[in-house]
Length: 123
Image (cartoon, rainbow, N blue to C red; front, side, top):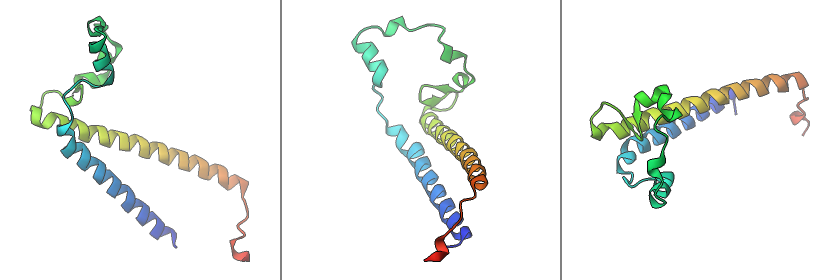
């Protein structure tokens, strides 16, 4: 199989996977439970949620001005959660793709220097 065919199949697979992830993030996320998640629920059950740090370090991050829990601030409630899902999915994909590119580039350069002979034509 040629290298171009492999690349186009990989590209189609990645685009299809990203498309499915975006569909889930946009159309399924509004149906998420409104009940408190893990740590919030435990804090409520054990009655220590009021002991939270008022000036938490997370409030100083730049994303705090944009996101509120699992929603985007300043947009209608019906759009806030799907929009946050879209942004989060794209950010996660971008980070994973970028790290993959860096790691593959580094492993290609290190494997080139070892120059292992290809004996596939012997059989």
